[in-house]
Length: 74
Image (cartoon, rainbow, N blue to C red; front, side, top):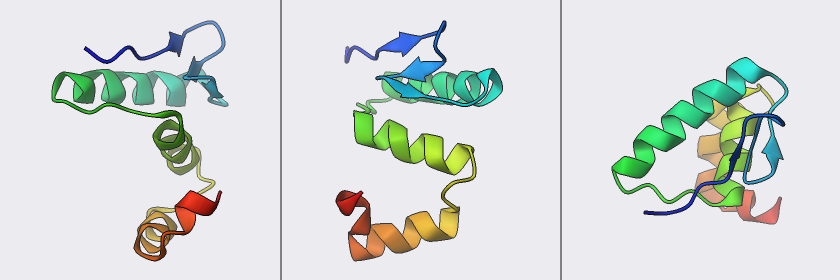
């Protein structure tokens, strides 16, 4: 199984820190569940998820960035 670095004291996943314990716990749960189904998260995917969950990136912006490839430029 893929090792995922969760830090409950810092509310971080792979060093990506969440601004609230609530958003951290929600993403932690989703990532852990998805990993059982084969999802192998990387730091960049956790950054993107964090940005969406915390409102810095809308779903519409995410979709547009995926279409244009601009997420790779961040």
